[in-house]
Length: 507
Image (cartoon, rainbow, N blue to C red; front, side, top):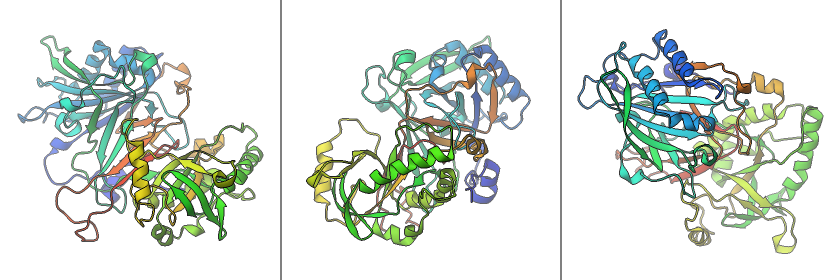
């Protein structure tokens, strides 16, 4: 059964994800996306958007802007990497802002300053679950106070020219299903060295209306990080969309330390950690070649869930359908069947790690697997030795922190599914919504729609992707309210990185 990815109206009516609490309409945030290629002229893009907004009442914020002294206009403008230079074009951004805010004030741009965040990502979310990311712009706009808290906080200022790590944007949103803690999803930005000479492109700017009705930039500041709140005063939960193909049932860890797994239990016997994978991957290649004549074998990324034993028992994971070479179900179908289970896993605090290396060897080193230890978006040189010491100290703990592999926990190995062209075309639509996703991490540029000059405007949609992945963190309660079990004990801290292609979260 295919999972349902609800649209905005269904979410509002049935799940409350977009339902607003009682209060003023000043929390209203608009979203809109433009898909296009660099072949389209800049002025044409603005004219198409202006015409669309003039004919659409859905994106009108009406004239309440500016009536309160504390209100400030704001916009978060995200561009795919091939449009990095457009963000630095003052004339283009001025025209874009004039269009967005004139449309919401009955033809007159309000006199307040407009606070803007510009960022370059690896692309826009695809139209369908299994299709490729798009190129263009995705925009949130409305109240700067709601969308861009701390925009001018100097702690986040810094140059993006000679940095070892990309800048990032963190989205504060509703909890994962079954949790009550707010969720922070950090999205690393694109590498734009070959577009504009910067490791990342993230900057704040302030704009002001001139007497000739134009909007001019009065201030600009590069940033290393920024928090965004896409929905002010919303209720409900974020929806994980995790299309992974399970290769094995959960395997109990027999021996391992830190991020190294030495042995797992298969059919009751200790086995080198990589042995089962070494036998399965060639079968995956053979199966794909038989099912799809156009398939071309290449490297396969492997991920594993690190699962506490109580979660394995509660979720009945031993009955989960896994890849079988003789199965009549396609990889796409199996991955869709497993998505609800993976949603439960991540909501239960299980972490996902990519397999970095392993296999081969002999003696005590036979079959070792190294998993990616990164769970936070932090500086690259941050205390690897301390990580190992902490893992050693917690080697006998039933509740190790930071997702370190320890005997008694379980691993479940997965890969990204292969989809036929027909399955890509019939997969679930991902628009309109508010979506953060993961794109394939390769050196190829996104397909710019065959360099067509066509421009498409998508109402009520904001969606961007990162090739690095998404970093999830469940934030502690700050209100003093107890958790869902009415217990004074706070849930365990939860952080993980989700970096397999096509993963996404509907906010």
